[in-house]
Image (cartoon, rainbow, N blue to C red; front, side, top):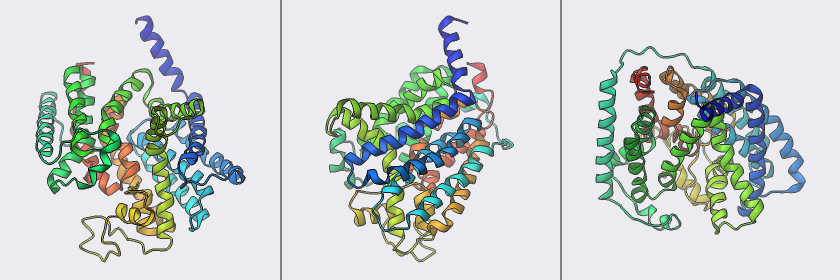
Amino acid sequence: MSAPAGIISDLRARLDTKAALTRLVLLHSAVTCLSLIEVATFQLSIDFNPRRLWIAVLVAAGFSVVSLLFASARFCFGYFVGFYFYTMILGFLWIDVFSDYNYPRPLAGVSAALALLLCLMPMLFIRAPLRQFVILSNARFEHLLAFILLVSIATIAVASTYNFRLVSIARIYDYRDTLEFPGPLRYLIGWVSSTLLPFVFACYWLLGHRWRAGLTLVLLLLFYPITLTKFAFFTPAWLIALVVLSRFLEARASVIASIFVPMLIGLLVIWLTEASLGSIPGRYFDIVNIRMMATASGALELYNDFFASHPLTWFCQISVLKPLIHCPYDEPLAVVMQNTYDFGNVNASLFATEGIASVGPWLAPLTALAAGLVLALGNRTSAGLPPRFVLMSSGVLPHVLLNVPLSVAMLTHGTAILFLLWYVMPRTLFEEKP
């Protein structure tokens, strides 16, 4: 073994111990709370009151005990998603202390904490592999990868006839509300950009097909002028970051570092430069610390406030159920939130939609438990695959699940398809070409 390889191997081993992970997750919890203090200086919707700081510190410190689960549990798909959920709920509990909205804040906080715990239990600890009744050979699986590339290219070609604009990120909102795609094409865009191409990228990268892996990144970037979303613009860079992190760190440490490091950089940039959001450092803080994490936490606050005084949906917002049951809302919940709070479309996670909006804070923990059981299928279908591959191939989905309901993530963004691909994969695929 060469000296650099030995150093990397030693570093990976040292950072994957229970003691190292414990320090890392607790430090991450502190950075999350410090970041929200800075977020409050830019977003007036978060009212940071120093007189309530001691309450927020006690709440965050007590809840951070949950993070110790991530120092003990083994890596799996649920570990990846669950750590992002933990960060979001921690952020909400911090915001909840300072909220000026008129909803029962203690009930909302307890409900969110319990919902996360019940969601994490199956996601972290149900890992028994499903018996594979269908297993593709290595050759047929590589043919499947080529077919996915062809489908992706065709999807991009057809979608670009509906919209293809090369505009800066600052101007995407001038055009995005006018975008319209046919239903089948909209599903294909979601499947290809969120699931299929990241999956193909991970396969080709770990098989050593670097040029093909690079092609998938180019195809992913082409979704930006089509969809005009920051998500599409940053996906290739995000996947490259996961490649780098997983090269130097084991899977568990990579998951924690994938949020901790970007948030810490954003916090240090703001502290050292005192920049405005219009500056380059400020834009980084806005994209990472505000948009990526604080916005997902803040959405829970808005949903708690709105549904404290409005009818619950009882899942009528799910498109397949809406024709079958009466729904008090004609528009999607994100639009309802926009019309009420004027913060733009407020998309939100399963904790807000299938939880608070559908059944209210008393029953929300039960829907979170059900969601955890659904997501635990990812653990079972990916059992036996290399942890680094599971991390890279699912790299986009934690961000998806922070911002959309579980039903949308499973169907529109193709999470169910990823589970199926993991299930039929030959477990010997990466043994032939390490």
